[in-house]
Image 1: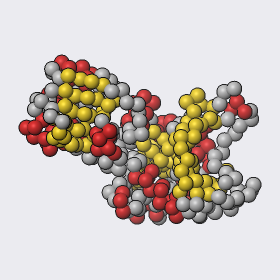
Image 2: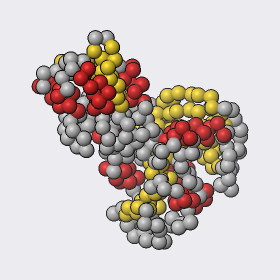
Image 3: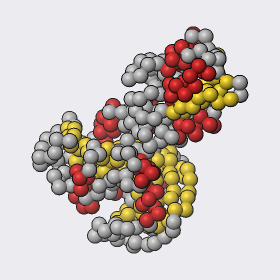
Image 4: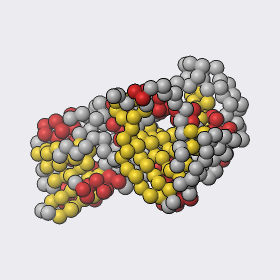
Length: 355
């Protein structure tokens, strides 16, 4: 199963929207006869790729698959049926699938087709597929907030200047989180102030093109924005009455039913479009809204060993009057990145702290 999980990791930067990252290993007479992983959304699943490699050797083999095989036909045939049709004897499943059309039905289907089934009960959602779990359970993508800050918790000077707080090594590390995301979300304020491209530039992640999603209630997005200079999709989520300037046809404009963009509604729409994971790169006001509304799951904070002073801007615009109202989080990891420290925080499921 560890080997199957390693195979699944190969889909980290290719399966970014819609489907989970899955690995499958076929074993017969103590020998590996087939390997497969889900390589791209809409294409063959891990089980099918492993069966293709194994050929006739799949007859009587055991499949080790990281996630419960699907039992319904979508863009591809049901994997449970495909495994049975190729004569497998046994299927070992890492974790149950939380997809509303599966949820144990894949296991039942395999058994009904005469295969022996074992479920290991690996943690769900795990590190590979937090997005599919969150989409099915919470009707929104898994939300990561990325921020760069000084040791005294500041993200920009009072003037708005923020280049560069952290090191080149930290900025390179950000490319990993962008590459595995289905969309990068920012606010119109960041676009107007910094004119970012928000692309994936590192060669090892070539081909990873997360959507750039701009929350723009009043329709102020400029037609000269730098993020329009490449082929990656740009989505503007605007308020009901926003008209804005004329934009290229390839820019998608989604209008909310309310005058201002509602975060929960925007995330729900992204989930409906198949976005599993989003990376928020925004200013303190928008970050504060994600935190206050409990619409986040993880924060990637790059902390530089420098002081920016009390007049500089904070990480998030969050109003807290009592200790009971503080936004709680758990430190998941700390890693030295060049001269900086990367801290990964996970949202406290209780929301704001309780005594």
